[in-house]
Length: 300
Image 1 (spheres, rainbow, N blue to C red):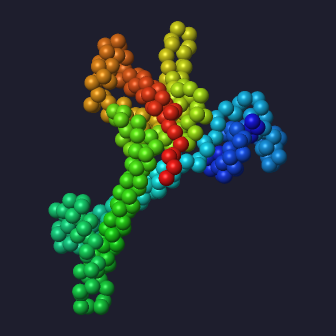
Image 2 (spheres, rainbow, N blue to C red):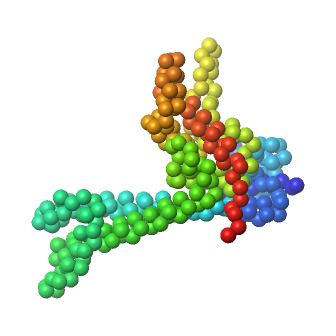
Image 3 (cartoon, rainbow, N blue to C red):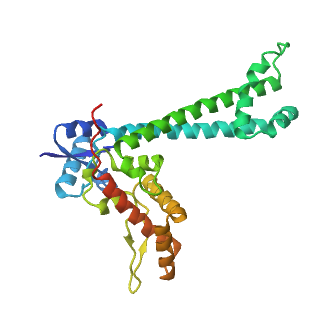
């Protein structure tokens, strides 16, 4: 089997990576050249290709590329779209409430007592009510009502998009990785985050330690002299790290086994941060062994 090094396998090099993988070539993700070396030797496509080849041959490039051709890539697309929709909805809600602050006192007092759901429904009807005004001269009050209506309708549309994407993501997880949903503390959204981190070819990770490093929960030595300790790993995929963090804190609330472990380590003199770090590592091990046997999508 041939080997190839590609820079940016998750972005600009994704199409090339998929083509090479389809041809049976083992693809490794290559970091960009060292800045010092680039300043000394210059930059060109032939030099970048040579550096990529040297990184693969020397063993410096060890991370195998994601295949990006299965259900996990589909989930990644949906998750990306959902993230932008959530961000846009939050922005629209903040804008609507900012408009209310400067609105006419009568309109503001009318809407102040409503909860968010009723507020958005009421605001969405304001533009229709303003059409009944006999005077053709547009006033600030009319513009305010129309603005609130447009923002409220935008919020409703984005909410529908988010709900649809949530359903699609939940169906993907139930179809391709239902074993994750059986674990305490893992819901569809958390499962999707971890699956996106792993990719469609989980066999590219040789051990649970590599998955822990990928999630940023592998211990990092910071020993000096007589002092031996490990610090927080600030590398890896931070979204996957946050997903493991949510799993741990959910288990600390509802899982008796995790609660017993926490109490035992507290008596041993460990801090809360050290215990959470250890628990995240244990969760990474559990998730790794659940994801490894994940099979390819069944025929439709």
